[in-house]
Length: 141
Image (cartoon, rainbow, N blue to C red; front, side, top):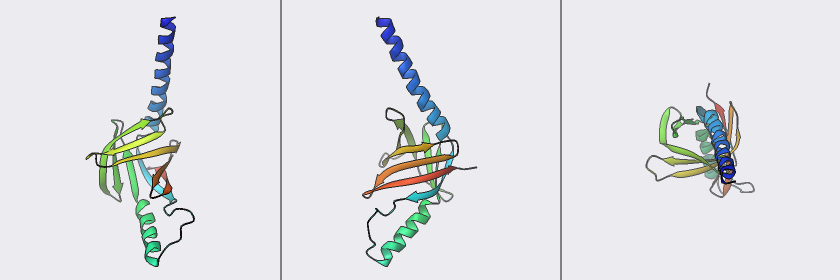
């Protein structure tokens, strides 16, 4: 009976690792941001023309964002052609759908939920400034 439970435990661990390996395989490439939703929380009105301009500039900057995930659990974040942040990533949660990015300095840790991950599409959601930011990426060809 003890051997049976050990076997079940090993099979569960292997199933979890295989799910994470599939996610890592799909994630392992350069992703270009193509759309950002909820930069301004729904129902929020701009206080000034400057607020509106800042939101538009932020939207434009985020759409030049790209993330490159490597199979050695490292990532790089670029804006345009300039690498701005590097660090490590991990997948957590029961289904391996929580992505945690830790900058090389360790000063910045971001947590995202993987809403969708296919060969060509990555959709992440995260919480920032009282809004649920949703970022849409396409695989860099």
